[in-house]
Image 1: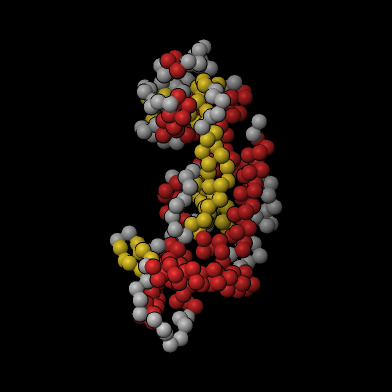
Image 2 (image 1 turned 45 degrees about the vertical axis):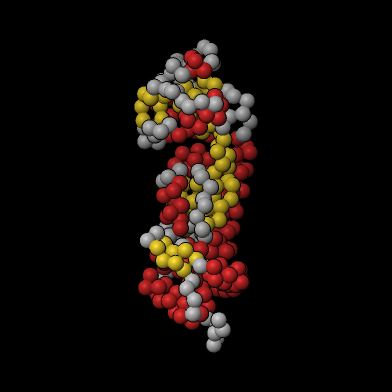
Length: 304
């Protein structure tokens, strides 16, 4: 359908943000405008074009086929326009604060050591939020966080993610409970300490290494991996923990690897950000690249 004149950039910018976030609420936070303004912009654009752009639902909106065509046609071009003017006039030479989310154990064991020593004049102050991956990604999508370290690959629309590190899982215990024989029949007699009743890390280790489901006696369910580590050190039971969290204790002999497979299970962590913000803000892209490089360099340095 032909239109009298092209829609304004403000309408198209709002459309692109709704397309990428999947919600009017997320768009309002992303663009720092009110939700009624978002609703008005999309309604105005749909009237001008004579087409429905989004199917509204309780959980958000779904782009129509025409919305997909529009995004392919001009999405990158609008990003280039915004990037030029925002970088030229409004993006400060250095971000003052970066709101970063991540799991507390990885943050303490890898992220903080990796970022220590960076040029503080060029790198912003960090305000850290801890949480589970799904919750952190949700906070990222609505603009509460700038970047997130996630233990799972984000699949949400409007989110870009890079592999940042691989965590290796070890089955560990205190020397006083470690069996003399590493056989599975002996190992399964040991109590296990975990952070969840579903035994996610233990279950992954058992199915990957032993090719069976774990049939174990749970000694304690604790709120996080730090507490699990403490309980294991004090002999409460064995557990599966990331190597970066226990490698120094294993080296010192405070903990021992109860089983040492040729290829331990690993999990890839990702650094994620909102695609639109990364595209528009060169400083945010630079900070993200610095974090990825610093963590990879730290991981390479501590890997035997």
